[in-house]
Image 1 (cartoon, helix red, strand yellow):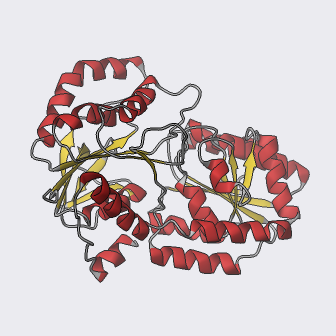
Image 2 (tube, helix red, strand yellow; image 1 turned 45 degrees about the horizontal axis):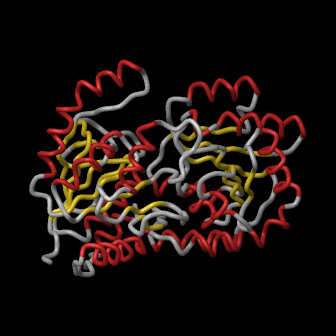
Image 3 (cartoon, rainbow, N blue to C red; image 1 turned 180 degrees about the horizontal axis):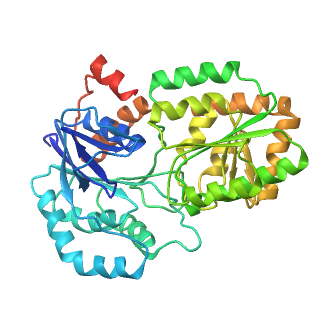
Length: 398
């Protein structure tokens, strides 16, 4: 077959068009740059605003990327859901127009636009690929729309590969395990150097990096900090990220009188955020569901951090023997784990080294070749190895 030239990416991620540049959330933008290396033209069908982006959004670096704006849909309240139902014909029509003329279609799930994409895409192209970035085996209380997306992607309706985090038994052949990091090879090399020279000394430096949303359970980590303060354990916490729970979390810090121990640094550009991984002794991920492949954990491991997370999704396969996996993630469990690292840091040195060696396998540059091989195999194509200019490589590392 002829190699597909025009790839359409269907994404629910909010984009920003500002001063002749297109912006999106940092790790996502860097991954789309990699996809754009494989095709002469990449078009994104996604919501887009004509305004200045948030601080942790970054510009796409590849010149062959453009956007076809889609209507914004979503929300958890009943009014938003009702509005989405009435908008459905318009949403479908907009997405269908974007799909016409596409040689290949990549649908990113889970998401409201992703659900519509997995239904429509097989009608417009035989070259399909999907990414399910959530927890493939589901979790208690998840939305029906997420289960529906997985069922469609498992079915014969979807005739292309589906990349998922982790290896799951009894899945169709087209469900393919895939692991990625947002770190480039130079970033990985730098992180490994940091890991080799890192030592743990008091006060213990703890990092949380992610969106400040209720499901991330940062409040449990703050409660653990309060427990440690009562025990007389010297700990510092830096919180990287922003979100709807930030004001409530700041109030909790004031309630516990932890202003000297806890520092909110806000949303940061990706490369700037990595400097806090260099600083940290421990990375904590308190969430108990919906973590498919938590990139922050992989990044923490690569930087020689003791990573502490709760048993669900891919956490056990990532951290078994290479980190600390907690049964429930209660504040007491988190506090006990951090106290153990603080008081017996040498016991965790081998664990940190093995974690760094394992995590360094997953880089953004390795993703490009893995995707090329996957698409060539499933589509019967022969996508050539892209030639990446030094300028593009340096931009992608920002």
